[in-house]
Image 1: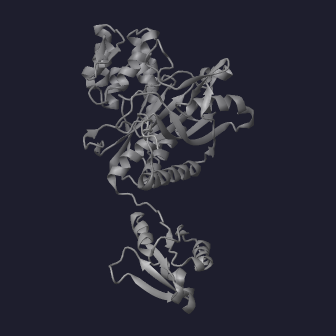
Image 2: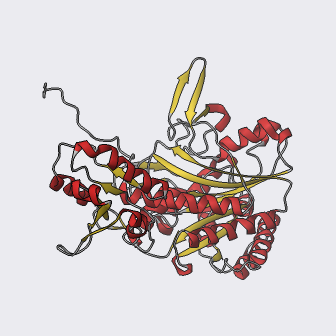
Image 3: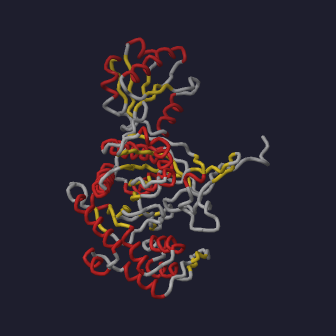
Length: 464
């Protein structure tokens, strides 16, 4: 073997293998989320991993000189194609393409991987699974958005979180947009202002960090410089004063712009309808959330956790929102030329998994297989008969795949895989029509019993 050019088994930064307990928990979360999406009336949709670049746009990038810097794009003949970075943009393309066949109020869900070429770490990945629920068409906005709040609350509780472990923060982009209009921030600076505000609760930012981004810019701990929005002192001051407001009553007294007042009224309507549901005590107004993507038009939502999350070094970290979203009025109009209302939420499944795996308060239903040991190759047909009986009775089972290994090595494998039960049958068992069951988690010397073969299923079920 040539060891000079041997490959190093490693992954690129921001990607992760998942297996054993972590993968079982992820699959359980996806099942819970999907069940709730269906329960709330949505139909499944699956779109390709790639979209034509111009169709999904460049809503992520903060670098104006390189608008596709945060996505993975490739040349495909005379077109550019991009790995999808969210599930909303593909939905907009799909709806515009198929709207004649869809109902006037279209509810869809999608659970697929998305890709972002961004700095990974602390529950942030460059490939991760999103679970989206969206409503598109002619709906009542307050009802639809309150329904999203209820969906998030029920789903997170079904995933195993307690009511006091998360908060659903909601606001309305019109509120800050009205203020931006009032203080005459030019259109070319507005998305920078929104993204600066969006970083308020991020580690290391706070009001000071936001102020730097509203003015000249900010250098982070790594030395990277983010160019600021270059607002005037007065403009910056008014934005910062707005961010200090916590109560809806104070907001109504402070903001007089008609668009802001419209946003406040819409927010109040969502809160009122959300209170009709039994599971929405966690819904709170929070005017500091604005969502960095610029396709959001009014209602916005972010879900934060109320417990500590640590990285693999044991350091407490902020993983951000585990479920977020909002309303978008212009996303579909890029194709159709007319505004089609849409609103939705997205669970970051891998980010939620990163947090929940640390709680260790969620049981995983993972039935490990029963191992049928092979004592003598001449009885191989009989061992397969036992395996088939177990499988036909919905018991996971497998036969040991190397008849030359002795019983000790077979049981060593079973213990390494943390199996619960092994079936051991030799010449005496087959002669007497019995089976020996070994409880691999029982006390040594007391963990085996020989039973009539017809009792196999009932006895095995005691141990799994």
